[in-house]
Amino acid sequence: MNKKVLLPILAMLVALVVLSACGYNGNSVDNTGKDGTGAETGNEQADGDMEILITVNNTVFSACLYDNASARKLYGMLPLKLSMSAMAHEKYYNFADTFPVNPSRVDCIEAGDIMLWGDNCLVIFYEGFSTSYSYTRLGKIQNTAGLANALGSGSVKLTISAAENTNN
Image (cartoon, rainbow, N blue to C red):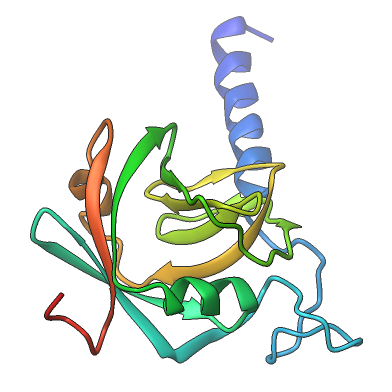
């Protein structure tokens, strides 16, 4: 086969394999976010009572935190004004305090995912990609249109507040 034909076909196959990593990961989770033992699974459902606003340079993104111990601790700390550093597809902030964690391999990060890496590193992702790292899921930004532009390159200052507490 001609190299001019073989290379595009090979590139398409590699792209399909990478994109398929963002599909079903084989983990079964019920709607409560608990496994059969009652322990939190890390794949919790959004808790409508923990809606937050993330404000970056006068642009506001609404998000909902999941119902788990880590997200509840973050919610209890609000409002927060953070200076987040940049890395690859994300912004991150290291808290001095630690959080309860239940990390799991997520396989596929989506734009808008809010997670905890380790027990103290808050991460907000503005691009999707496949990963082999483990995170504790905290929540999800609902509408990510403009998120990458708002977060920009380099460090960024942002405010995280409870949705009903918008005067902070």
